[in-house]
Image 1 (tube, one colour):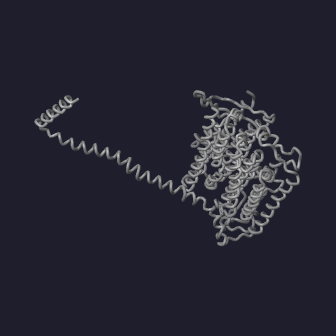
Image 2 (cartoon, rainbow, N blue to C red; image 1 turned 60 degrees about the horizontal axis):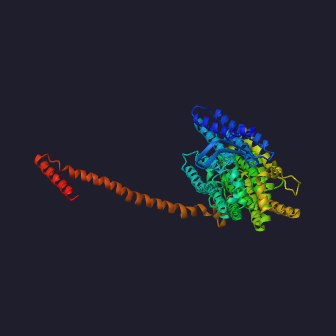
Image 3 (tube, rainbow, N blue to C red; image 1 turned 90 degrees about the vertical axis):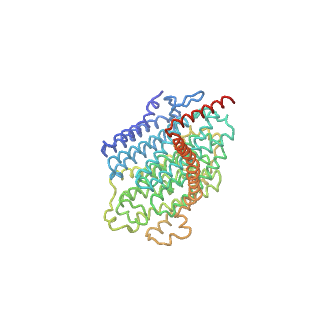
Length: 632
């Protein structure tokens, strides 16, 4: 076992230690100690992840078997970690962005009691541990343990302020909708065990030829059901915008470094299976693109700053699934990375604004913050440019790689994808102008206390802004620089077999230039239009009419779900509770009790105290026994 495998287990173990120390010692630890422990363990994991990342450039895969997790009969599933190019890249994203979010939280959560502060950091550490376990797992069972862990932590953190019933409802919604998706994942794992007798990645991919086309299609569709829940795709996406109920750093962690990227990672890890299931890939591309467009339309008319970013995440995840669906696995992973940079930046920037406005999240009550919060303003602007896909910012390279692959697959997918990109540029700069430009629209008291956030908040913003600007340079298209796509070269061992199966589709340089120019021009026009319409924003009731009202109410999807699913299920539950349980089951159980009680009262009357009566009953008893014996 080499040095990589000797230290790989420490990467998730250190956050687990942080969880245990902060969780068990929450009544004794001060806020500063809790923050140091929580952030320090993630920093240590990040440094180890850097070492691992630098150690896998040789293209090799390293698998460590620590012990047998399941060993029964012919089924043996080990507690294994797999360290390769894909897992090491995700390790950097999770621990690097996660560390910045932890540092940010030390200031953002300063008003909490020491007990709650330590508990919060314990949950954050457990969240990171679960995600690290998910990406390091050497088989689908270990991945599923981490998969369930991030689901649990999302519930704990979304409902962290549990005294608010709305927050509790949001946490339960996330938990239940994720369990729906997880059932699909679990069924796929059982299917693999039934057919191949293992869940080990290497063995499954080596023996995929033993599976029929029907098996592969069903397994991949079930895995995709799991991904739709965890990564918020139609129809299981509505939990993610409601997840904004949690503290803003939690939103950044869920949307950028953990949780929602799990589905992308799982499909990228299983790329061979999905490449051999063209039907599933078509479904993924269609669902991903539909989700991207639907969420983008909703984001156009949201007024809660965090809700705009939430629907933006759903939309960007849709683009990642579009990339997976058309076989652009590197492009999807690339967009995961760049999205982690600019979306964490945008959420933490929104948190800085909310912090300065003492909890205000309605953009209609903001405006003019540029002159009060210069660092937050410039970093937020850089994040908006990056997500809008303006070159040479990071979002341009990763988004256009996906769109180019979509064009190669079907030009219709590209046209719809560009439409979504244009809407992305519009709603993000609508958010920016309403928040930072024009005149301040809040209260005089809010304006009096406006100030830039402290260093623990602005430092992560600056780091993430730099990454959002230059992060895309590791994936420069060949049309600009031969061999410039370093990420593709780095991940080549992971996707090599899939490329052999699906082949490669190269676009001419002129076509690539046209596609890029079209998306950039469209985004630029949308930015200018948003700036002109919202730089001097004044609220008008006319905004809430017609299609605008439909978009503001999110296409009434939650209301439809409530009418079609929630209310009928509750009615069915009420039927079982009132009729079956109380009327039949309780009636039988209580009836038996009442019958025994009544019978006991009647038999008690036989106890008269008269000896003659007792003798007579004894004689009757003997006669009855004699008759029974005679006839039997």
